[in-house]
Image 1 (tube, chains in turn green, yellow):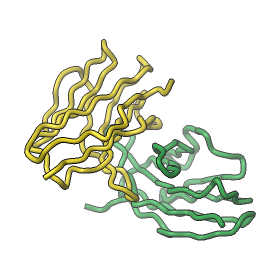
Image 2 (tube, helix red, strand yellow):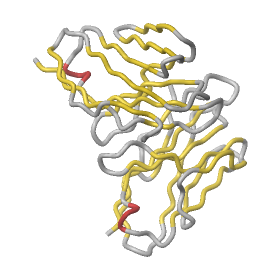
Image 3 (spheres, rainbow over the protein chains, first blue to last red):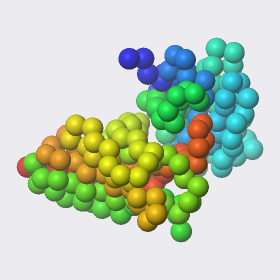
Image 4 (cartoon, rainbow over the protein chains, first blue to last red):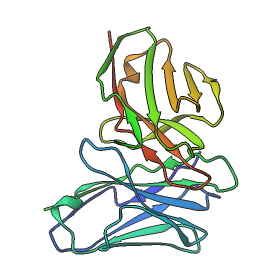
Length: 113
Length: 111
């Protein structure tokens, strides 16, 4: 079965640079979620989108923005990167009319130097 | 206090034994409950979901939910070394809403 696709899988940036992470949800899933997981931490919710509209917002820094496009893929844009942004970034998707189950992509490991 | 609490472990069980993982949550509005397995450096993998009080079985896994006690558990029967991972309990308050995770319990299955 098709899964959530994320790209790139690894990304190395310097402080103050920008980064764009992409997420392609499972086909027919209409809701996308972004989570950040620091070393030894549990995943923390950043933001979610349903039908291209922001549906919920968590602890996402103002330096980050995201959107969902007409084909339901989503991009997380991160600017003025800080060392503390180094983490695993996961995208998950679900179908609003189905179960409440969220399926996670493989993640993007962002390292800020 | 975290909204979702788990014992961080490690929980060590011998191969073939039953592993029992527990989770409590504080938001009585929580509607959906999930167990994810996460290997080091990998993404969370959904292994069980449960929505109503009682037990739900799927293969070697059984999830138990008690909303009155705000308690969720996961039993793994016939534990295998490949079950060694961190198990994350997650809850949400409705359809298409964010997941709130516990800190995870690290399970070690010994030979």
